[in-house]
Image 1 (tube, helix red, strand yellow):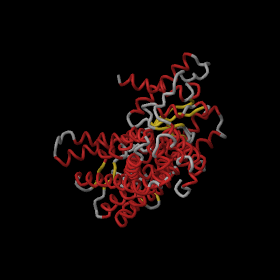
Image 2: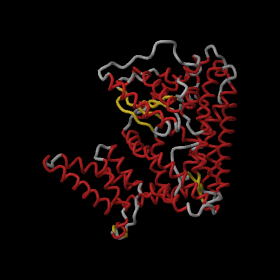
Image 3: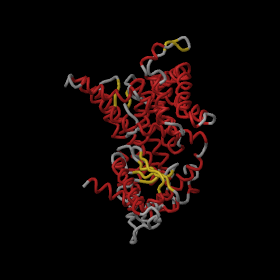
Image 4: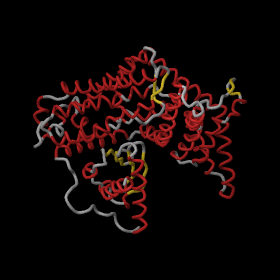
Length: 504
């Protein structure tokens, strides 16, 4: 039954994105089905948003359909299978038109207007984001995002193992769980190297081979810069740099190596040159950079935790809008590699709590706006689990003020969690990707697990309450309430940003 449901979802999505011939590539991350399209104009955005399984759509370098954690991993294979089946059956057939009949959109014009406004804002932001620096950040994110499922699985197992160890239960099982949880992390550099070469146009296995040097135990016999190397030194940053160097060496070789000996010379020179530079340069430099990141994060939260948490929690939603949050992915991974968890993620997760609180306030401030309240009710469950896109692009961002007050809620929650870090109760997440309530199983730290859970839950509560209060009392002008608190034509305020230029 579950497989039938996932296939039905995929079958409903396919014609609305222009059919199989309009899809050139398919992938997925934690929450989104990511597809590359031949003709963007063939996509029916409103009909897609109206599908029950679709939590929202986001357009960036790929067209992204938000399905939520778990669901996306099940729908994507079905979507891929349908595309392949359609191409095999009629490879020359034009993209199928959507089935005739009434539009499946269950929302009234109000929700559609707000979603369209959110999509327009996202499209404008995408145009501003097409800078070389931000495109580089996206490519770096593409290296790490495929690793997130393994980070989550191993992180939860590590947390379970720590719980069993503290309780003294099942001592015979603890070593096995430790091996399962640690195996991936001990070789994460290899996976980063493989994905780096793949992303930047090199041979993936050569990128992995060069990155594997970093974790090879024998590097302990090598001296560089007057210091003895240690296995894993430089971590994921060193692996990324080493594999990127390998890509450029490989491309350089292919410009002059004769085709007759290319299969022998190019791989050998790529691994040799990149390997030597890695051993006698990159490992040391990346190791220093990794250590500096860990030291700075610890110092920041130990000396100014409340203020740092306020800034990080308050600015994370705008960072997401600007695409700059992708720069944090290798930092999170480096912290996890060093200490077993990233202290930054629980603080950043408070931004989602502020967003949820703001959305609930919008729900109660607009009692007569049935369509918008329906949108909020459908998106809130995903919001509690850390999937904030439907609330951001469907509710708060198009309205303007509620997006700002959501940031205020995130700042308050971040300050709460940061304060306890400053008081010595340091903790973090053993994996990246989940947020909201989904982060509970991944929390770890030096304090009692009960205390850690209570502080994180307290931070969420503060984010919810402050986000709600800030939005309820300051999220609307009188004119906005007049225009929006009706089911007839409430979209006017959302489509006239000039009324609130400072906030929209």
